Amino acid sequence: MTDIEIPYEKDRHGWYRFFEILPGTLSWALLLMPVVLGYINITVNNFEINLGVFFILAYLLTYFIRSVAYTIRALTGYRTMRQHMQLNWAGLLQDVEAGHPTAEKFKRPRWHADNLRRVTTYQTVIKPSELMHAVVIATVNESREVLEPTIQSVLANDYDKQKVILVIAYEGRAGQEAEERVQELLKVYKGKFFHAMAVKHPSGLPGEIVGKGSNISYAGHELQKYLEQEKIDPSRVLVTTLDADNRPHPSYLSAVSYVYCIVPNPQRASYQPLPMFTNNIWDAPTMMRVIATGNTLFYIVGTQRAHRARNFSAHAQSMQALIEMNFWSKRTIVEDGHHFWRSYFHYDGDYRVYPMSIPIYQDAVLADGYWRTIRAQFVQLRRWTYGASDIAYVGYKGFREKNKISRFDLWGKWLTLLEGHVTWATGTILVFAAAFIQPRLHPQNIAANQLPLIVGRIQTLGIIGLLATVYVCLVTLPPRPARYKRHRSLLMILQWALAPFTSIGFGSLAAFNSQTRLVFKRYLSKFDVTEKARRTESGKLVSTEADPNK
Image: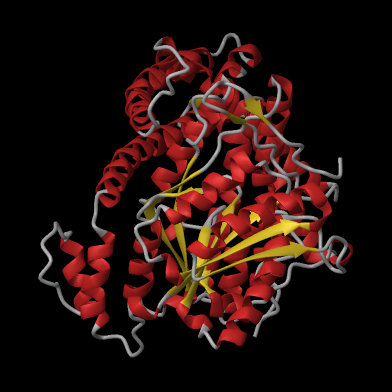
């Protein structure tokens, strides 16, 4: 079996360092490309072509085509989400249990009958009645106003809670006050589940960095002990990990149970619900709303691209698989996305993620004060873009160590990962800025001076796509709280004028920060907890220090 652990920072040398340096080098090179190529001209059939102009035109054309596809997937993804949110998943589960449609009358989707037929061909079938859920909620120092609604949202699911184990994984370093808060919540809600437990993660354990992966892995081991004690088969337990602010849709547990019971070899898969950053979207500052709604749109689009699905934030996986892999990584701050690659190498490529169109509602970034919110947003995106560290992990494990993975599949996934992070850093900057470089370099060149006009026309066409995506974002918003007047609804439309600035000022700069850190071995070795403030119905802002050790 392939060793799936990411190397410690001190053990990264040679080829591993080459792969770490690669994304940052490519991103900076791509950013400089319009300038460098702007000084190079080639002649083809007596026609002089400036490579800088050619490069920018080719890039803009590619970007435009991808934008059209993005818009189509956004509309399709929204339609699928609305359909799946309205399905009677509990009724569909009854059909799976019976092996055929039951007498109960409700609307069944066309693909349901195909799934029922397919299940009969499996050698091993897991019945819904045999399945249990473990919901692991990771918390550090979040207030009760943040944590309690998450527990309540699990209880609000249309699923038998006597088949649900609640695990609150909390950090010992958060101190006595945080521990008392968790124990109070456990006392209130313990009797409402099959079992509930609070697991205190000790600080300073050897081989761990300060991060979510270490916390939930420790809780996972305690859950394993409990299952062994109760003689519960871990292959019949599906584990969902939630952050403190994650609120599953009422149909989530039924929907993920359905998918787990109808897919082939369910242990070699993860199940990825749809992250939607809408819990407090009306309370967040304007720029944070743009970023949050943009992130929501990105993941709606992602549900239509199953081949590119990866673990992010809240996700589910078989307890048996987690035990086999020694749970999540304790050596990286991007334990969610990295866990996809751990699983991929553990199963020699025979592993997939099933994207679901059922939401897990999460918070937009909101801290106590505007500038603290700005900083918290950048730090959160820096942590997300630090997923570029997986490029080295995948490159080294895949190409430098022995494994049985298909080269075609490995190259496809690795290049997609690399391209995604390089585009994250450079895409928006090149689209909005590169075209204005050539006229300054070559004021007499007709083609160079036409570039800004071409960009303007492309952006005009892009407005049609923007309107479609804005529509999707608006219709996915929760109702406007009574404490806000109608003009705030208008701001939800006008705010999109800030999209280029937020994309560059937060997304691109965060990606460059992360990739440049990898180039110079300035690793992020500590999980920067995002401060989660909550505004009450009266308008009061309730906040706690995100990191109790600061």
